Length: 57
Image (cartoon, rainbow, N blue to C red; front, side, top):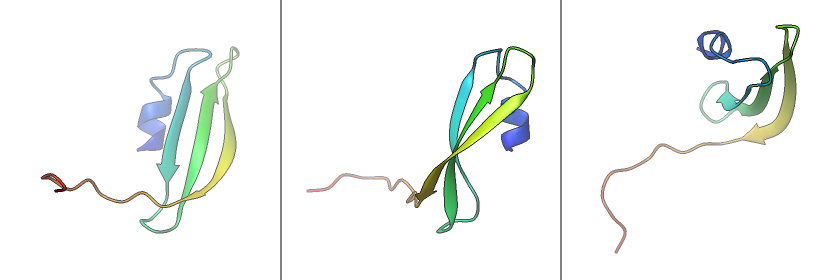
């Protein structure tokens, strides 16, 4: 999935995304450089929880 998203980045474009299995994700920052290459920076471990429908009272 990340490959499909990085393919859409314009030069200078940045994508920040959680990558990995649920509960063991890394937050990555991917940037398309001016020469067309992709640089990657690991921003650290994260755990994203699914959104739930409804409201909290």
